[in-house]
Length: 76
Image (cartoon, rainbow, N blue to C red):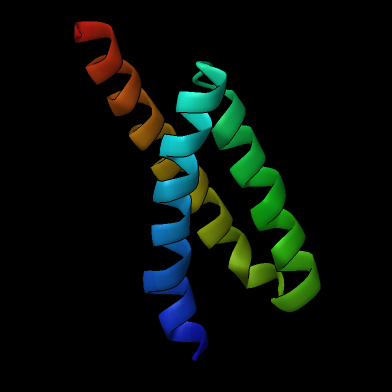
């Protein structure tokens, strides 16, 4: 079950939150920072310290998605 959460569910949530967060705030750094804080909180509550690698991966994924959305919005 944890495998499904880490590889499929959490990245999908990060993608959706990154898109919605950028559309609402129009700031590139807000959503990745929020993803980092929420993922760190999840790590402390439900997982162990080895989950911190996934926290970094989800934050990086959020940065990439936010920059892509900002680039698309800027071109329009």
